[in-house]
Length: 124
Image (cartoon, rainbow, N blue to C red):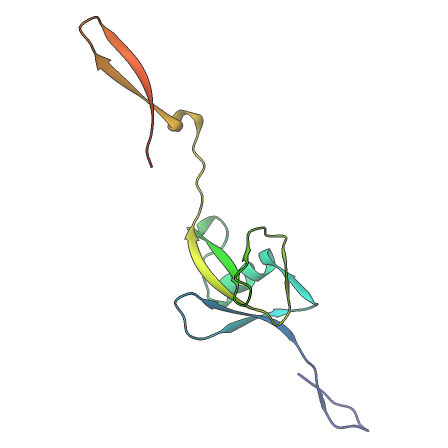
């Protein structure tokens, strides 16, 4: 955007952005940032909107955000990312929660004495 003033030359308004690229991509895209910082949650929403990826309950994966320079992973959605920083984005599967009844499965073994029941932890 250019701000026009009658007495002076036009001044360019500098917009803050956070640059991102997917791990497999060669080019960077950007998400606009209003202030000095952008939260990880806001960045994820901006990336999903820019790349037209599904949001909300339709999401089958989450985004992993890593600072390109420091290699620090932003794990909390409330973490702040400074403006004009480059990050690398990877898609990772959503973590599913297992219910109590899914944690163990019942296995019946027939022994000469009778039927015994053992609980075996499922391997996933």
